[in-house]
Image (tube, rainbow, N blue to C red; front, side, top):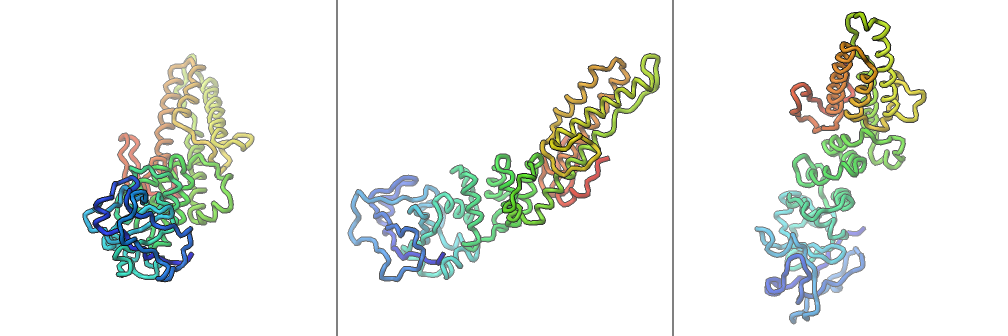
Amino acid sequence: MSNHYNNRPGPSSKFSDVYYKPSSEVPGLATPPQDNHNWGTLPDSETSKVPSQPPSEAASITISSSFFPGSHNSVSDTTFRSSEGVLFYTNARDILRTSAHAFEAFLGAPLSDTRFRGGAVIDIPESSAVLDVIVHTLYRLSCATHIPPFEDLETAVCRMRVYGMAPTAHIAPSTPLFDLLLAHAPLHPLRVYILGAHFGLHALAVRASAHLLAYDLAELTDELSRRMGPVYLNRLMGLHFNTVNSLKSIILQPPGAHAKTKTCDVDEQKKMSRAWALAASYLAWDANPGQFPPSILTPNPLLKKDVSIRKLRSTFEGLGDHLSCDDCKAALHARINEVIVQWVKVKILLGLYANARQKYSVDAALMVTAPFDEVSDLNVN
């Protein structure tokens, strides 16, 4: 793709003031000629000029509802045009304060160059939705009100380097674009994770990994793995491995025994232990379908189905229906509560409620802090 801008002088301020209507087609201004995606450099003789006479009432242009003349405090001195012909009126200094080399490589000259003033229109080969995300990012503003789909956000991030923008400089926790991308993690967890991994957006990858605990790693294609890179692929596999093994280590231990009574001796208590082991085995099987026979002892790095707290509780509480000893029932419920507490800790540590290198306030009994980098050292006792 060649770098260029089209020196198409825009309407004078007189016409802009008279004919501008935000977020609608503007009657009275000439429609900028389309160049059919020919992004080569145009000779000066081929550039279009605004007619000296006022344009006809039938002609119209479309202006961004967020970046129109007078939409921001600074004077609009730089105009971008999307591939559909939507105009974005911006200020070069405002953009360069955020990204010192924005559009420089694409244009072949700094954005501050005077050739981009005086009504020149810079054609950007992106849809208006993608360009809207990019310009909002350069202004450090959120475009959430436009409800951009994930595909447009993803494309905007992927195109940033073309326009001299470093994704790591614009996508960090608490920035508008970070929050927008993260909002899509529940529906597109792998794509958000890969986006973070590919561009070195560690915090984004960490937060997205919270939604990948039940992802089937067998579905990863070579292309997805390549884009993710070996480091984050290894981290994702480690996340699954630790989750499964932590679950197994938690549920392996049966309820504690109590002192022998007239109605409940050692043999009776062993029946509960065997029932617990059977229930634990099938919980492990539920987390790892495809592993047969189900085993809570054999490591398997692929977590196929996240085991919920409700699932744990209902499975083990069902054992109490077959117990007649009150002491056994008390031991069973005590052990179930221990399992729930430990499993919640694991989910926090592994990122289900993760916020990298940030402390969490949960129930006092569950307070846990652990960065993503320490997941591989997880040891649940």
